[in-house]
Image (cartoon, rainbow, N blue to C red):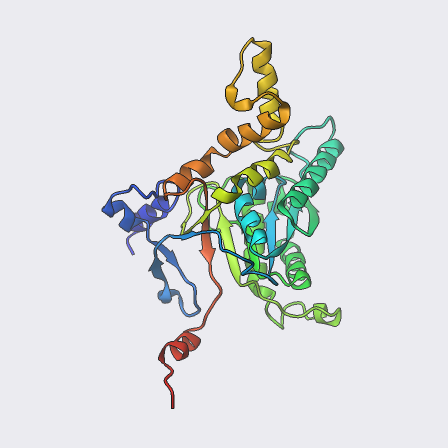
Length: 330
């Protein structure tokens, strides 16, 4: 593949992909994925798929792990998808990788860490997740932590909770400058397939755990990525705003709406969007300003609100596919 063509497809797979694009642009939005096994030459091209809300509880009995280096990552980039999957029957956990000491409000590091922990627990409660795991790696220097230990701890948690699906930063996302983000992504990617092996960390099995491979991955990114799935979160945008408001200590939402409302009032002004009370101001600010990217991305695909992912589906061997497609009665 020519380098220029590959980079063009990569960039087109980000925020520039839209329902109103020309035929030439739509052709460029086809993405490279590898849903099955096999050699590196088996990669093929997929169209972008819009994942919509499903009726009932089609995912009942399944478990997801939402993995984030910092307390605002999942709420911003995948909060709507987590809410959708929980509504469709998943149970879930939130794994917070860092101690969140370097971002947020507080007079001391200790106060910042405590405030972020309280926000994270409230975020998990509002998303309907059953538990939160804090791994407490040092904020902004996770790339100096032992990757082997980080991976081993995630493998343990994936086996313990029998995780079927993960949502995490894209390990192949472009231009990611935060070392916590790409370190978390790399550790989670490796742990997601190793946890299904009977040869990795066999001491887990003596404690009653079993090999349990993660089957699906939703990778999100702050920058360009190979996007092959847009999740329709239109029915969950109000709940997503409510989740993000819980991140008071850091993040683009929290109480920023109320703070803006008070600032404007002191200047003798008002913004009708913010309503007449702080709760309304926070929710409306979050939905219409802080989460504007979700609206813009959704509208590019004929949706009200959407979240972008590189989605990796459950693996299926070529042999199993061939048998399923070609078996005939005796």
